[in-house]
Length: 450
Image (cartoon, rainbow, N blue to C red; front, top):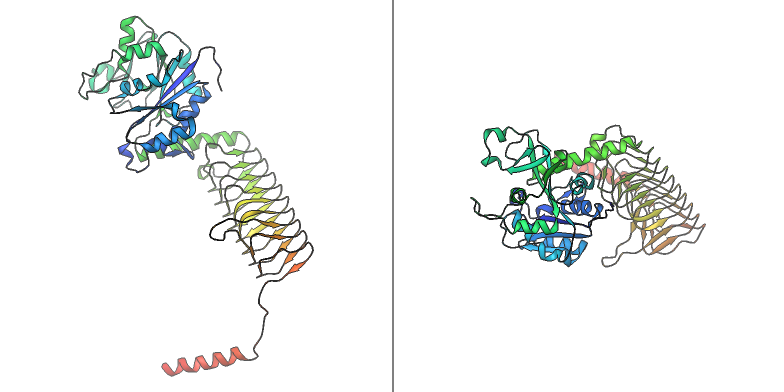
């Protein structure tokens, strides 16, 4: 977190209706890297050391309000109703900021790639208005930044710009910072005598210059300030996020033969020396120690994998899975809320849910921890060096003692003592000649119908 002698606050605008997303999920709650876009904006504000964060929401979106309340509390919410432009949205936060004195930055809940490092330069000056600009590859309909030496002369909307201004490639990101008193004084002077009848935040720049207050621009990369308004842009933001994550992990010594096929979450941790094979997906909460191996087509979320452990191919680790050093979870194995000790193995076709597997224990193919009785979850314990034979069902709550064995095909409903062999299946019987007689009878019937 950045520390500063000048108090900081952030106003995050999240009141847009997001109709272009064509989704029942509010726009700012769509995820990038497994995290809501709005949370990315809040993360950046917290990393800047903002002592106050206000999120401006719309009356039309109770889901966004509930999301903010859960993370920041009710005191962090301002409501814009009705929506009358960006300037009007910022003014909605004035009462919530109360007696705050310091600098305030205005950011957006639909700009998920903007980081604290990108925003930090706006706080360099403490007596005027600073905006973040970017050099656009295709300026198109972006508002242009008109500079006067090292001062920002104006922000001109494309539809109102002259050919000379349209030729500029310096564009407005919408992110702005100013001393809180100056900002709201200027906003009170903004008028809505325009085609949309809205109060534009960009008018603050011209009003500040009339007062003789400094106005300036700092610049960030275009990708960092991209806003998301439609599903195609959401996919683009995700691709940019993943690109940065992959480059970061490769630089840290993670081996990825096909990095373009690996997808990370915002909080994925992977130690150097780990190998990640193609088509692996990390959901939130994955922690992979140095030297582990995640094999192809595996999904890891909310799980911890120790050094030397191996996952997959085609494995699924769900929240609470915790693989010890050298543990192995093989193909088509699902693990949820189970701690596997050092060297424990479940090599194929198993479901392990809610339990513990001791060091060096072996879980055979087709084994199921029957953890749910229709109402409650129950715990299964498999002791150190125990062996559970293929196609066995362990009906929780149940414990298999250290060094015990469970015969293949067993249904185990009672605890097994250490060192014991448990068999929980019907006794095999044989009917001499029955199969041959049956086959002969059926062949005769079939021949009679032809």
